[in-house]
Image (tube, rainbow, N blue to C red; front, top):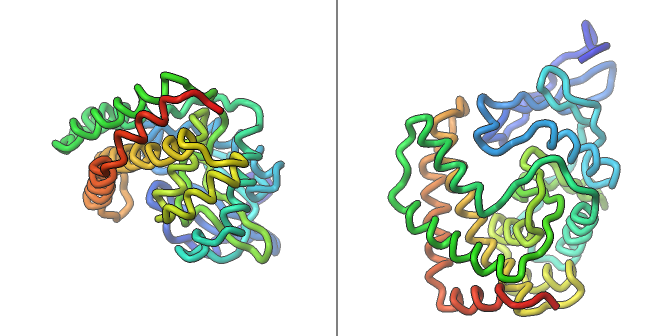
Length: 290
């Protein structure tokens, strides 16, 4: 980065990343986070220009750390410290209120320059994995049928797309005192807002009561349509996550068991689709917005 020559040194390699390699860098007493992108991450539907735009916007909204810029493909942000949220935290109304406020604020911001179509992404990942010689799991045919059923229900009365984060894993939240940060905007793009809510719910194991509270806080009231769309997007989120891991088997250099990760998400998706409530969710999701 300009002005860092002879002044910067690596403090720590930051753990936990399964797409990129991340480092904390000290420069004249200031600390920064630097992301080195993994190889071929465009095959994961990452748009680095959109990531930069989204990260800057989130920083302006007070949601994410300040961004210095992208240099030689590496995103540089102010380093923020704090503690990762726990499963218990995600069941707390106050935490869900904070997250809902963050998401609603970002969702209401201007359009982003990249689409992240939650229904199309698993199929795009299938094509990307096949192009790298990765075997497509047999369960994908069933999963694709389920995603198509959900997409069909959603388009009956579709909602407008909005800027979404699309990767609301626990590791992407950081509590710094009273402030909650949302990190890692590399999958940001225009999507259905229900995907962010469902992605948050399934990735963090929200109980039914917590899902209900999240929907009420985000929208102001709970309707069968809103709740059904969030619960169905939990399945779509797992389809995306599983197929993301299938692509990673062909491109990643990080030591991580992507095969087991994919199987875990396929299994959870199929278990949720086997719920006796699944047909009811489909019918409610197709209803008119109220």
